Image 1 (spheres, one colour):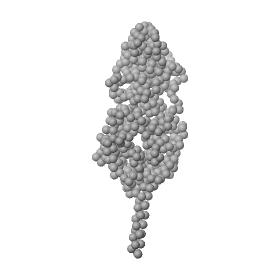
Image 2 (cartoon, rainbow, N blue to C red):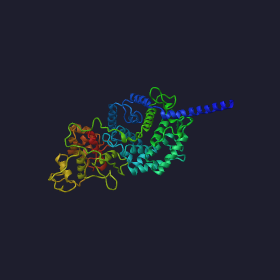
Image 3 (cartoon, rainbow, N blue to C red):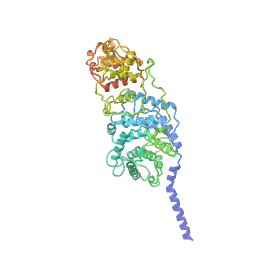
Image 4 (cartoon, rainbow, N blue to C red):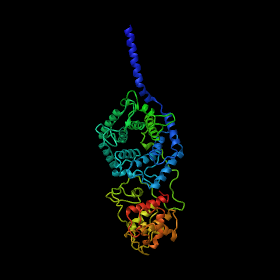
Length: 532
């Protein structure tokens, strides 16, 4: 009898121990994280009162807040969009020449709020990601976030995506993981690579890589349920793993990710502080970056539980219309209407690293400038007077058409007839003589300045300059005295408004203008006129 009682007690003890060991997994599956999300969202809004472009206090805060479904004032989103537009205007759309993940991050945040990442105050955040060589200069992080941004915003370009996928797969280590540097798998990089590859896991090669990387993450998980990245046991690593598993449709309490009875969610919550924020490392105090990433992870988990889109799949984002659309200046001519972005992604093979790359792509997407059938834009090629006139007319969206023209060398039926007719009618261009236009002649920089001034005045820019003001603006250039008297006022106008790039020491007024710099001039005129 005593033996039976001891046997039953042993069975009960084993069952109790098993229950205790399984308790964290059950808690992970059943824990209501909505209150944690609400408190963390409130903390972020109090801490990040005016988000803008930035690694912390910027896009991740916006993505976390919006995708978590937290209550956010309308003004918070509008303020973010306006601030990003202003910041892009200051840097002329150039966020970085080294870290192209900057463009990916902004594109994701703009898409999260329901905006168009291809037109953020006139700047295209996806266009730089078409530049494969520049994107991979950052290492594996560049392609990872480029894929996440392109796929998540619904703007996949198959040939470019294929190259990024290959780059990531080629970087997989023997143990199945990924890393930024060295030969040892890093949980953060491995998790982010899994998130990027999750969009393409129907492919056999990707599915194989995903399986190996998932097993690697499982091996890297500590007995406490967390991860160590570059000698730091931290919350951001477990946040990235949660995001990755949710992107792959793997439950966070999957048996492979329960170690010593500890779960991913349980580990993340060990970094949670009662004030609504998270620590980077245990005992380290509140960390903004850790809090942003933790809310992203909690949002990913909640969305997975609710059967919603994954964290970065923005196809379910509500449509956002900027609160202050760019309708131009008060003095704008009513016929001026800049074309919108066409539903295409434009890329040219020869503009990587070009100072006017953003301008070229923005205008090309609106049909204002075109490249060649070879896939090149030829930014350093000269441009004719007819070509320049066509660009100006298209940029302003002016109605074209006519029957008679004063220029004998602009025949009816020629491809440039309507453009020259329209530009002449609006007072934008003049001939090289009363009856000749010289359409095949090369446009000089000072001629371009005069035409751009006339175009800008139609857009509402009406600053005038006397001789003293002209001299004050142009005297910074060593060759300003070589400018033709009829062009000096227009050159001063263009430099004053930033339409001409003033980073050089020469104007070179009689030199032919080049295609790339013309795109930059026209683009800056439209931006300064608040039409882009």
